[in-house]
Image (cartoon, rainbow, N blue to C red; front, top):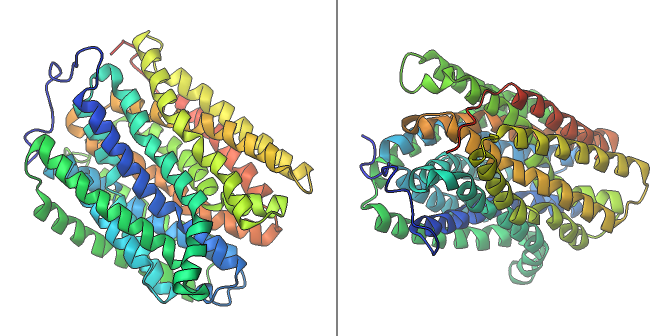
Length: 483
């Protein structure tokens, strides 16, 4: 049955003006959760880039190393995608606080174990399992903020908390070369790549324990046993399915992007199962036109996020012929912009809603600007044989600023168009569909690079998809009454 303390009354969420409030502490804790979970998943991209540059045995003698490296990232997101809806449902049943704590502890253990693997298949299995555990964080984070934050500040709260995403991206990207160098000193050159997983996994595990203590304090005992067993059962089935698709398709000689597309078929089967239960409460969110439009528009958002997050170091290094360390520093401009963009987008969204304008017009405008800027970035790469690191830094920062700002706008708009009792399921479905972009993007983009020897084509595709998503936002029907 649902968590007794899950839904405070509207009156209880109307906090007094000024001063630090309990919901501010919640935002800060969830910011930390985003930070560690995103650092754990982001570190794979720089590590894969390092493995390719050093012709490491982990990737074997792959004739298309970028395609294989991208597939590793795609398989992580196959796992991450498939627990989006189950995670929201489990949160509605066992409590969002419980699922958040379980997710972080799971991610810490799985990331640590990733650094201990000795073979490619075992490593891929651990990244899939990491994704499956982290997949339950998103819907429960968004739901808990909506439940415990004054409605007029919901967008700001979602923006502040998800700022941890940008901080985690930045930390993972900028620290990767130094952690690998340290790993070379401690573990030897062959095993240097393990150190980022060991360090970040240990840090996530520690923060997961702190989160569990905090979640108990604000709402009582956590229903950890039942929820963890249910998640383990779901994850075992989904991990077996993901790996079966990978091994069968790889054995048949299918290209990496094709394997990623097949993994998305699993998501569509899950979505189909949800639609098949349209008469139940679980399936009621599938009848919400606005939820579906937002969900499919977000495929482009997650495509963009994990195209640049996974490959930004490689994009800069290849275009400017720079070192791994310099490329990582430039790539942090893409990640770091979220520290400003996320809270600013949430705040602007709340103000637009309060003034009766609605959140949708801002969401459309920011998406169009971001899509155009991505196309400008692609044109700059195409026109210059050796692009300036400074120009790329500025373009990455400004583009990412708009990109990160639009995300809490979409999250808050989704919160506005669903009933509170279905919030977890709605956010789960939203991110399940959106993560299709994250699954396909790394593998297909890596394949395009291997084919053309340049990232330009992949960047053009990214910008076009963002502009297409703006068209879907136009079709959303929003109630513009102030909160």
